[in-house]
Image (cartoon, rainbow, N blue to C red; front, top):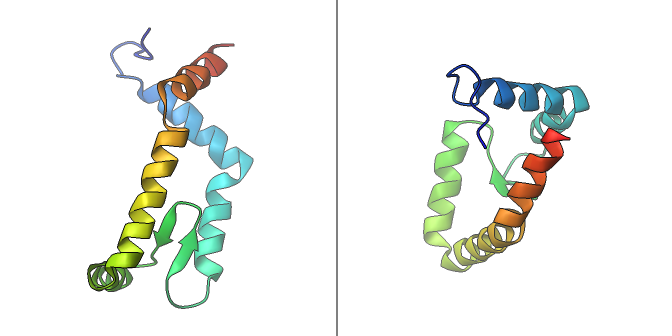
Length: 99
């Protein structure tokens, strides 16, 4: 099964899904959380976020210096990937879009 529509490589479906997330307010919720967070690292359910390039560099330097923190974040990311990004979940999401 393909989401390709008239040679768009699935772009129409991706845009439709993105617009649905915007309509549900999820994107704005994340933007608001980052915008209103106090200065310093922003902890999200996905890991550390950043506001600009300088903050990204600062956090990268912090992770390079703090191997234990880097390992914890890496382990958490791996666990989430194995938990949330399985074929079973992807197929369920695809089938959910088709019904």
